[in-house]
Length: 387
Image 1 (tube, rainbow, N blue to C red):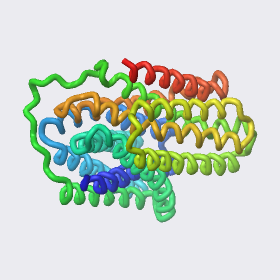
Image 2: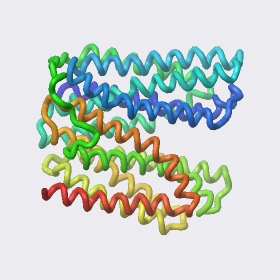
Image 3: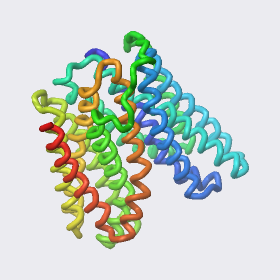
Image 4: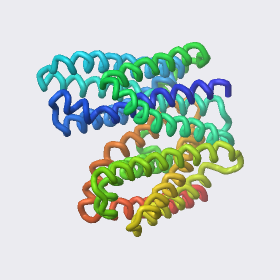
C-alpha cells in the first residue's frame, strides 16, 4: 500500500500537534490569569466533539471519498492551531479579559477536536479500502505505532520549544499539519464517490461493531486512567516528594509510550494472527499488567506493571480497528471506522472522571477495575470468535 507512509507521517504530525498542547496548557492558563478548570474544559470539549464528529466524517468519506475529508481534517487542525498561536502571541503581551481568553481557547480547542476527528476515522477506512482482511491488523498496527510516536513526540517537542515562548510550539504545530496536508494532496489518490444515502450505515448499537467498540472504549479509558492516576499513585503509594514524583511519572510514561510503539510494530510483523486472537492475547496481558500495579508498593514492579499493561493494549488497538473493518461491507468502512473512533473518544471523556472517582475509594481501585474489565473483554472475545 503506497499511501501507508503518507498516512503514518500524517498521523504522527497531527497526533503530535494534538498532544503538544498538553505541554503548554498549564503555564498558558497561569499566564492568562485563568483557572485550572478552564484547561480541563478546553480539553474535555475537544474530546466531546471528537466523539460527535468522528462518525460524521467517516460517513461523509463513504459518500464523497477519503481524500477530500482527510484534507479537510488535516488543514482544519493546522488552521485552528495557527489561530490559537496568533491569539496566544497577542494575549501574552496584552492579557485580555477572562471571558475573551476562555471563549477563544475553548472554541479553538473545540475546532481542533472537530477537524482531528476526521483523521483517525478516514485513515482506518482508507486502509480497509486497500488491504485484504487477512493483512489489515498489521497495517492498523503501523498506524497505531505512528499515533504512539506522535503521543511521545508532541509533549516532548512542545516542552522543549516552550522555553523560547509559549507561542513557539503552537506556531510549530500549526505548520506541521500544513506539511501533512501537502503530502495528502500530492500522494493520496482520489477514491470514488458512492451515492449511498439510501444504504443504512451501522448504528451505535450495531452488533457487528459491538466488540470493537467495547475494546476501543476500554483501551482508551485505561490509557487515560494510567495518565491521570499515575502521579497520584506514586505520591500516595511510594511516598515520594513532588519533584521526585514528577521525575518518576515522566520516566514511566516515557517507557509506556515506547512499549506501546514496540507492541504495535510487533503486531505489524505478524500476518497469521487474527484480530480475535490479538484481542484475547492483549486482554490477558493488559489484565496481568493492571493486576501487578494493583498489588505493588515499590517502584520497579510499578513500572513493570504499567509496561506490561501497555504492551497488551498495544495488541488490542489494531485488533479492534481491523475487526470493525472486517465485519462491515465496503460501502460502510468510513462509518464503521468513525463509530469505533467515537468509542475511543468516549473513553477519553469518561476516563478522567471515572478513574479519579474510583481513586477516592482506594488508590488501587481504578487499576483493579481495569484488570477485571480486560478479563471480561477476553471472555467476550472468546465467545464472539466462536459464534
